[in-house]
Length: 555
Image 1 (cartoon, rainbow, N blue to C red):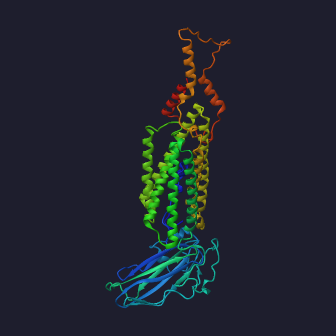
Image 2: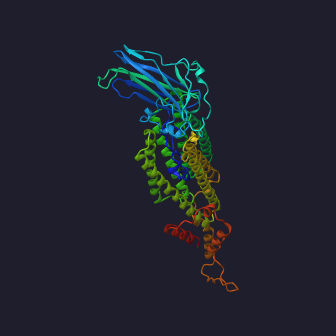
């Protein structure tokens, strides 16, 4: 996980239930760069510059002057400090304000804060006539030293190799080589030794370029698994799209409206994964992130998650299967979709634009959690009502479809609860977060779970030659044959008095067809997993009226 990336996990316990996680997905945060351009001048007070990145073993750090402007002679004292961390939470807490405390330190700054360090100082650099004299690269890499007072319960992942004996032939212009897979801080200190507080500003400026190149390019050790994951997910969504377009083309005459929604979610998911992969690939090749592309990816992800939630809502409402149109409910669906899109877009942009959490971001996360809770409740209430109507209509094919869909959502509940417990035990509770290599799973799990749920939805609502079995059909069609038969009998015996039917010999009246149908439903249709796993939902007035209306059609 990149520095500054804040996962959506604990705030969005119910995101996955609506097949819209992403995520966070939710989502891409601040990716760690591989190149920096540092501006140093006589008119600024800053003398220390902090760079942070998780690096693979045998990665190279290079320094290079790219622009010099100094009319008069300037003498500079340049030194740098490289340190590895074994606790990711301590590494994440380092910022520009605390960098001075770490620079040159040979001891642990906190309990269990083990690691290794290198402190390197150069001879004086002289800048004169717009040229600087002095060599930044080293001929032999320095040997890392262990921090003092290292506790015994936190051991280094691997013993650092003696890099002091290695030459710099592997990467010309390098100043250091990493000794293990770990998070690193690299602090550069540049001081004008003749500068005094009371002296006037001196007119000079330099640009120092810093590069950190690993075996996989400029990408960091935490972002590398995410890039591979997004590449695989992009391939999966391409396969989804090809299969779905093929089925749409084969059965284009009998398509359901909900199948177009599924196709739209697949298309947006493919675009989202492609943009995220392109962003990571750009960082790997060029070392810098395209800021506009990251914001575009976040907005695209927000649109995809919104449409996915709407898809599950209308599926639970029985759109196109139980009811031909949503009616007044459509305005509620559009309203909650726009509300979620607004907060999701703002939260995504803030997450990639702001390094540290703000009050606005917290408000957006809480709002998203509340909206998701309402959506989940709405989905399961709608599923309960839809399945009751299908039971009354004896629509066994449609009822089986909704049972599988409900069971899939319940599976997502259990899988998500187990995963959140694992994340809490692994990343939240430990005092030293040493399992930083698994941080990418926290974001990838929700996206992978959504792809599984989407695959189930594609299978259940797939286009086929029997599409019309799932299409909406009025209940009165089932009794058309009986009404037609009664009309023929009445025409045949027109003008004749028909004697009413007598009671049975034992004095009991034969039950009517409605009672037989209801009794058949109770005896032949078992309770679904929803009735067992979920508490009984309160019947609203609308549901009671709908049930009475369905029964009246059967009479």
